[in-house]
Image (cartoon, rainbow, N blue to C red):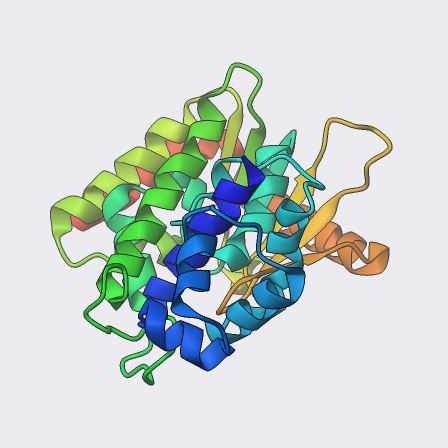
Length: 293
């Protein structure tokens, strides 16, 4: 099973990079037939070959993730599907196994609370206006090679991620949101903006989801100065919490205890200075009225 997952992943990465089998083989010093056999799971590639191909596809830093499957060191999950960005896969595996998810993103509705239109718009807004040939966002004309196709795939990944909250023993989500994230989303159509607000309101009614709206920094005296972040707590008591920093290109998993504790303190301060959870429905109703004009 692992071999077929590795094969599908390498095939999709080649397509997204805008390379044909022949051009990839030539650049990697391989035969086209070798690329064909690897991508169809007919032969297990050597580790050196996987590293070479990932470097060619601009994914060299994520080689350990794919090699762990090739070595059968872990069982693949939905987060190893070809459409899931390789740089996001490790984080999604952690999120999938978490018991509690704490998240804060300035000017951003967390993916676990996004509607499909928001997820697509957010993914598109992160695409550089001009991407160089060969970059992951380059529109090559090949299947999956365009920026829109990748953004659409990112939106589908968000939808799958949200299914974790619907599990009978799914995680608890605690999110602190900024008003700008709710009033100025990357959505052009008024009905979509209202739909996003309604989705947050519906989620906030669920017993395993807590949503707070932050107060202005001028009132609280606290201004978080950093990237969006998530803290993951796991059911195993011996397993330490993990910090995830959501950076421009990919999330960074941080296990350093000092940095984890710093962000735990930051989230605690954000939560304590925000409006109470039971005030969220009223605040969302107020924002809803503002959007209606």
